Image (cartoon, rainbow, N blue to C red; front, top):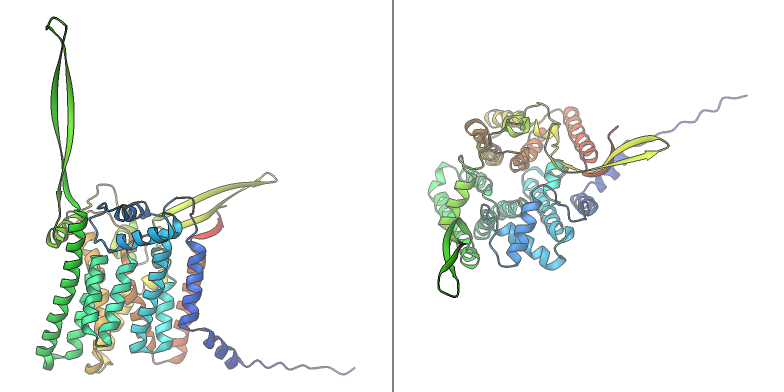
Length: 453
């Protein structure tokens, strides 16, 4: 009986080619949107995730013409109010507009990165940023970060297109959305002067001053209009008046005296943007939100970028369910919003900073240093304030503040990996980061029945 040999050949190049055709920004964003559509309905019973408890009420108050949450700029509340007006005061009205803003923000991030690194590396960076669980959650709940990312990334892309006026207007809207966007605009300023160079300092200053003036005008005029319309209070005082009422009998003799206390509240209102900005600074500055309780590890900024109990993170919202089947009890967590980062990505902060400095010093020609300077300044500007606050004052803190640094981490990682000369090491790094990002995203996805025991 003769031996039958079968030879099977697999053309891996064709497999990777087909996968490459599927790996497009449009496919990723559509899939990303689908995950959000699964996520935003949980919870749908009126429960709120983390600071939705504040911002949903503030958005509804804004819709009703009442000032609320003056410690933050008003644009996110106005957008939240529009969502409630269009879709109702419910989970869909709260979260759906935020989802749309995050999807657009990710596309703008992709466009910015693609301009310097090409399509493949821009997609790599966008996937890493989008699949970070903390970034994902803040784009699927009524929190106030996404409007600032949207207009901040739009300002960067418009600047790179040399549409300076529109870029400055978008920067003004980013300020109107969140005070931290000033550090994104600061990175644009670094890129601006780095790209012009010392020989063109005068035109660079001229464009920069005009840019700053337009951004401040857009921010100031819109904030002033909001303050005049809503008159948000900066402080309140309560005064009491005691009214005396003497009860007399028919003969005119006093029987008793009734004392009535009448309370009245007076508000000191903000009616111009300077007052409002100072109020925001005093609320969030070094003397604001000071706490006395002991710190959790995630409240120290250095623990965001150095492996130290990386899975001890804040829980935003959690549902526990107990079931019993045949005498066997199993507990599940069907909904669990927790600020769990992509540890591999967050812990790359220091290596990326070192890599950028080394590349700029050794390998990148002087004429091409504007983009790595932009990334490096974004990393430093967005992280350093939280590091200083962790050292200098005892204030309330969460690891989610790192999402303001995270876009520059993802962009810097793509830049540094692309610069690796060895193709095998380069492909290995891409695979490790991408696979870990996918695994972490799926494992910590907030809507998933997870057995406790």
